[in-house]
Picture 1: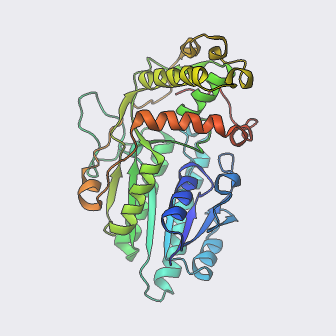
Picture 2: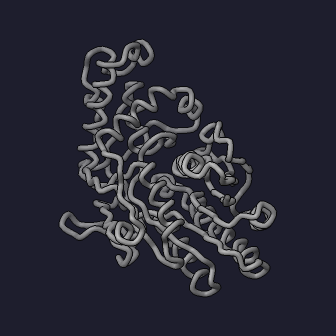
Picture 3: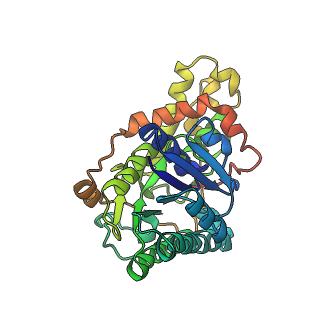
Length: 358
């Protein structure tokens, strides 16, 4: 039996990880530390018996020390972050405070409990980062590897890059046993509806415009959140302390191609699932029209990275990682999850703006 502290465990990826870990490791105790900001929701982890939610801030170093010591935590998995690029452009200070200062606070607490006053037990601090720290790729550039130079282009990615460097420094300076994983774009259940896939799904259901930045040809690598959780599990089980591992989905798509797939899935769902037209009467598909008519092109976002792609060969070779979720099935399952869990996303209705673009 192990005791884990999961920061941001009521958010999207963290919440899915809590569900995944509880299913795969039913004897482990999972302490979730989450401040329940706009994207956190206690209902995301409701029903996970092994999970205990502690509402608190990762910048509260004393609280983190208390949890690590009193709950006998041996593994800390750090998801908590401000993560939406658009929000980082309009309000970068929150990203510096949470992503940089917050990570520094966690590291300081871990050092005190596990090293300075610790009992010598093995421990692990696993930090979840993003492929965005590497910057932008050209159409013919090789995919990001763990040796790609950092070149963040947004306040969000810059704050994550700073956090990555702090994690590395605590290993090399103090001997903290850390690993870092840099992931590509995640999708799946429980994702806050400001990100591309859930935003466009819900806009399609409500008949609102699907605003597309620039020419819509920015390319992203898509990773199902369950595969990401498997990758993190592999990092914890087999990762070498001090190392970084890229976790990718192997599905590169221009935004336009992804949006066309979303539109097609929505149209198919309305044709196959009874009652959707009555539940969502504002959707074009409710009246036999194509969802694609909602696509709207808008001015590009400042500093918009053109392409991301992940080379995950190191994780495959050293951790035994490989994505298992096919994208077509994963996207269809994600759509059906949102259709089946309307109560969950309706709870966010007053806090997300359905005009955020991609």
